[in-house]
Image (cartoon, rainbow over all chains, first blue to last red; front, side):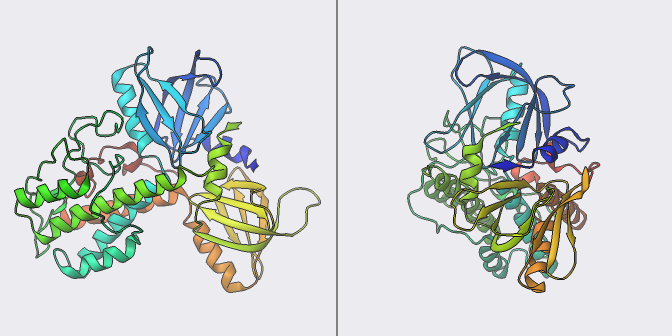
Length: 256
Length: 149
């Protein structure tokens, strides 16, 4: 398949801001030796160069549909970019510090076009609701369902979710492999009351570590804290968004 | 340049934002208009021979210019080589306009700018950063700083 390589190389090297850049060790495909490469993340494309000053990348990894996970490896600070297909290559990378590794895993997990689109739609919806003065009302959520075009309805039993749109609280929420506690990705959103006046958000309900299932954790949230309808809606909304992401990723998985 | 072809081929099989059979001409000497299945998936434009399952090629739609040319025709070129144009001839002016609009919005960079715009608007209206709830307000990619075309 042809690719517009010249334009890709230009995109990689031009002075548009990168979403992340730095040296990483990249494990070879056949041999387990690591090579130090200069990596540049722009959008959903991860370019890598032989040297920082190289005029053209050696290669690029299209990140759409990938999962980013920590690795159990002799090499320190390793993480992997994995794809769903049967014969997909896994890219194993190693950072030079814990902080660098965390920074890369975070930025790579959120690099997909789909993720960006999800966030844009969410903000678009919020802005729309604010402009129509529907904050906290029912009309907003009907509109929201339409704008996301959710392909899944909230089922009762749900698989573990990928780390899309979680709230950061210092723990490694981007790491699915270690089954980390999902931080409360909820009602911090209700930044304004029914009249559209800004107010500090109430404390979000804590998610239990054991419940990686959406249904039970949302149930816990409902039992534990009184929430406004808007807060609950936001909570479900984010779950749906994550579900959709998961569904999209799983859809890509089994394809040859 | 090496790239993960398998994943790109898999992406080409995903549901498209937009797909149609359109006459296409690549910027190569002596090339002519040929009927292609053109498919927009995320920020890639794939093009296939109409009877084949695997695309002939893919264009990453970043730093590109979508230009309405003469009737029914639009072109895609890239900022570093603006004269090198991929030309597309549609069945109708309406189809042509739809593709121009869709392709202009198809880049990651466009979405990023939209996000920054909405974030800014919401922040102005509420005094609050809407990205804080997701814990992503500090992400480099969402900053209100200088974003180049």
